Length: 560
Image 1 (cartoon, rainbow, N blue to C red):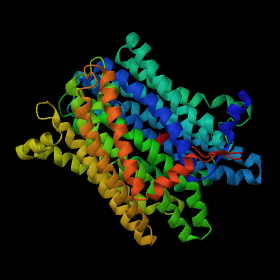
Image 2 (cartoon, rainbow, N blue to C red; image 1 turned 60 degrees about the vertical axis):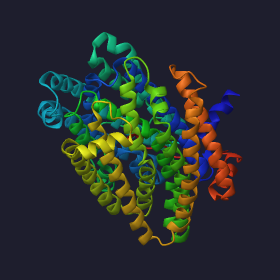
Image 3 (spheres, one colour; image 1 turned 90 degrees about the vertical axis):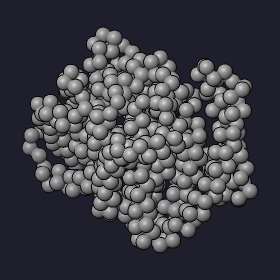
Image 4 (tube, helix red, strand yellow; image 1 turned 180 degrees about the vertical axis):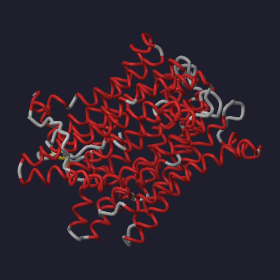
């Protein structure tokens, strides 16, 4: 029985939807722990300056990981390893030892150099912090510089576990990462103060890496360090990874600027921004990342076979299902924003004002979830077609536009009473201090909308016939979601008198029962509209998802 249980993690998934559901399951496990992590942080500190410092200290280490660590990600290295291993196993081992040696030296030197420049960088990145706060950010950042080293090494080892078809082992890494952070909050913070939070992150990053080491050592695949590099191989990897790294890292660049702007705002603004961003990232990880990764190998196969029609059909199919899942979630996030935030974060020092402000920020972020999910798919499709230039340019423009819009809305809020009142009235936060932070998710969401729109238009031009069925799905699910939203919103007032809203359980049940009734109403509408996606989802859930063979390649660490 035990052997059968573990054998399931070495099996292949048949079909895009089944693969997406499997990847979504592991993403859900990781995101669930991330939500527990955020709840503990919210209860311990509330939306205060302490969390502002904690979140701000991630920006430089995260940037190093995205720009350097993702150069050796799974999807970059696996094709090289498989190509060399086909010739002989020794070729694959030499390649990974060469890349491991170069990367380890490169990222250690990078982090060491940055260590000395952290004070100057922090001064420019967070102009709103006092000298005392800036000093703490510098200390935290220096500790966190260990995290890109461990996570980068985990990327390399993750490549080996995936190439060896150990999907479950790789999927455990982000779960252990969040467990390490939670341990830091519960056990290390009382001992070391705020720097204990950073120690927890390092513990999580170490666990992310070390969980894969026993398998690597057992199978004799541990890379050998050497100072003599094969520069030809390194150049080939960099040629593939650099455009892709910037494309994926552009969002992180935007985040650096937005957090910098938030440091000029009310204390707790960075915390509110990060809490709401993390909440909107849950459906992004479960839907957008899962579907784009599940579709990726099939898109490669159809494109390389020269069957452009099938390639376009596969893209259309994936986009339809992303829209099918995304729009209802966006609707529920907007309607139930207060219930979601209060249930997940509403404990301890996280008060009602924090809840309302975070809920308003979440609603703005949620409006862009559909566009973020589609962007991930478009980027993967162009990678499958061997085109890194178009997503590179699109994401570059997106990063610039997001920063400009975030800054522009912040200035407009400060100088226009009409704009300030309009924003606060729409989101029902007129009596709450610090609403200027809402300008940042607004800039982010509008930037994501334009990015997805541009990629859609360009993709339609390159691959005719993509939009017809996708637009049909969009209008069907939009109509059904509108009905769901109306039903859910009105039932909130009904269940307001049924459940005790002074308790977390009562708030949860109010949102849960209203949402379930809304979802039922949406399914009924889709049934009468003869939704093809509804029929396909029902069929997928009745199929046997697993079949013996090879596992799906898991998501890159930077996308978890």
